[in-house]
Length: 416
Image (cartoon, one colour):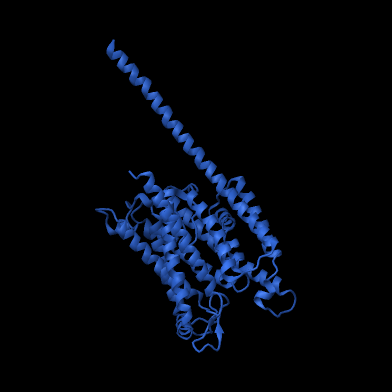
């Protein structure tokens, strides 16, 4: 049995891992959205291959998940069980939950009237399509998040990504017809008001983008950026709701899901990268007729300064997912919600310091409203879990009290 010191040490490692990996990931993500100087130093160009970025991260994520599963392999466990391809593949990680895109988990939820699936053919017939569905959502969500950074500041994007509860709720209702507690609608209202305040009370949009169009350039950029973020969040919500359904119906661990979804994402993005697609806004902004892989490799060759943030982006995103699943496995979703909530706040502060963003008092107020709404969600979850723990302890005590008089009576009858 692990001692209290061991538990504290494990928790400290998880917290440090999530913070360090995703703070570094955020810095590299924002750096990749701004121009890089060419090799001769005469020009500066933006990297326009978001699918290539996704390929790099998903490839490293699937590799790290496989390495994690191999290192945690139990004696006598077959490869089919290790990879989640066997109906008997159940281990202590089954309680894990999360996203495959370096994003946070929503916790285990009950399936909507569906019995758990354990057929030996379930992987091919029902589980694999779910993984493919998640991979499509993730693949096409990432470019919209990357494109949004050309129109809104990174703190605005972090704040919007903190509101994933909204699209997750909507997609769960639309796709799987699930109902939610009343307080969640209060959280959604606070988040919506906070985002509106942040975007409406900002003052740097026009200067940041240097737009020279008709009308209000700040308003135009905000509308475009928020539209991209909305699409990104809707696809993220569809991903999370599908992952919730997988965990509710199938006996898989978080690391197994991380492996398969990222592997399928790598195959999908690699296929897209080698196709000579025409110019497609957001999804394929490279030159029409040129493959994204060639465009990305040419850019790296002429702009070598991109290599470091690119490697940092892929590596920290992959390792960060492992720390998230480790936290879920040993401490549950409540602890993870607390860690990720504060991490996003520090991500905003770090972005403001590192890249010298200027936030108005109204934007800080909007940020406070958003995090207040998310804090309500965390507080309610903590209260519910604490209440369940108290009920379980009382049941244990009552059952022991019930057994004690019975044993006493038996000893009394024996004496007589």
